Length: 80
Image (cartoon, rainbow, N blue to C red; front, side, top):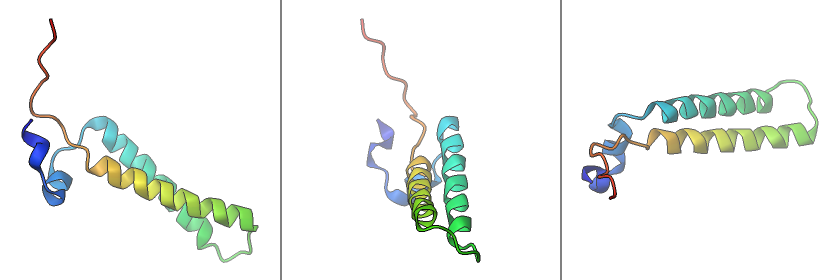
């Protein structure tokens, strides 16, 4: 495969498949909701703030992994 020897910058700038674009958007939304809950000026229960921290972490990881997925330029050959 041609995509085998890509560095991080090339991989981030390469075209992303549609499914991973959707997944990236979901990850950004999760991280945003978690950030809003953490930054809330109102006193919130510790469990909710802790869960918001996990939302930020999970959303960030989903977004980064989704951004580095690239479309394959070569189609796999069918097995006989």
